[in-house]
Length: 499
Image (cartoon, rainbow, N blue to C red; front, top):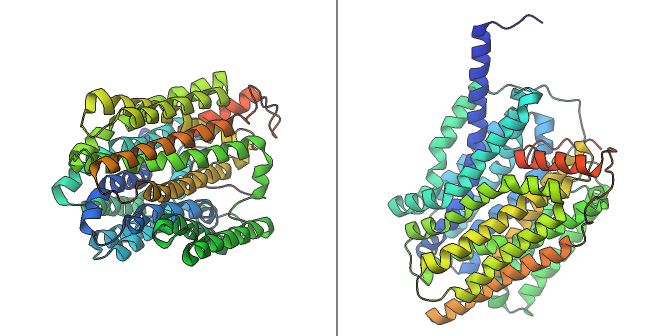
């Protein structure tokens, strides 16, 4: 092949950098929006004061359910239609949902906008990483995808403070308007620089109906949990919702076992490590996401912090997570998944116990709140990324992507259930002291989820797992899984799910 001239190399390098910016902006918007919505929740409660908290949490749970349910299918659709086409379409849908949410005159319209956002994000994220991987040579992918993942981590870390500043200055609608200029820039530049990929030979059609069934099953479960106190736990409506969730869930499992290209490949669960890690992340997410929203609600309702002050108060936690995640992967490679995870669950539970035992009605940030935030941040950094690596370490290399996407789905499902349980635990207190007691119960619940996750993790084999299906040694497989998860390469990449 003819060698490139200096000008051609410069143009090529410039194009790659632009592709990186375009794809990273997709990850940035998705991560930033999630953080901002948590911070915006107190303002949303004031705007929609006639709606119950059980209805308001659908702003968060609706997004999590739809995004988690569509993530695997979106990766397979990118394989069929092309990453460029799906990325630009997903970006447009995400911005459309953001615009609808920003203008929403009612809670129903706002939730609908969030659902549209989730559809767009699910389409956008796998395809964005596929485009990035295709733009760089193999030897540079780990580094560049690590930078890509760092953009998402930066959005999570700065989301509370940036979101709080925007909301304090312009109101909660700014949490959605902020996506529009970023999205427009990304779409216009993306149309010019993103390469059209060669489509593979015709493949089976993914089980889109199965995704709809999964969304309905999870929505019925969250509805039953969040409305249980209002409808009565033994009321007809509550029992009907639980029953619908059970029936739809069973139907989803049956479809997944029979469809040629299912949403959930049940064969993955033949791996003990995969099954245990995903069970642990489901339980852990039930506590983790409840804590995220609960802490903002506590600071604004019991300590009467402004949204700006509350956003700044919780920011140290995500900063610790971003700092610890990389070293945690190296520790797991050296000491094993199980040991690092058990340490992480213990640290996370200790931070939650600190909240439950030390936090009172008096606002003592530096002496009481900050230590708990730093401790829980350390625990999160030792657990979530390592759980992702543990989930895929025993799979074939070509199944890493789909296995990690299932792990992300488990995280979103657990989060939606956890937020629904938050509504039940916090209730409708009549005094500040009662509200404090309810938050203590919430933190105790979150700590119990960490404890249960640790118990499940004990089922991971100690030390070596034996050889994986590729014939790699345990140490090699573990290192490879950790490296790819920590770089972000397998978290939301195209699914590569040839059966």
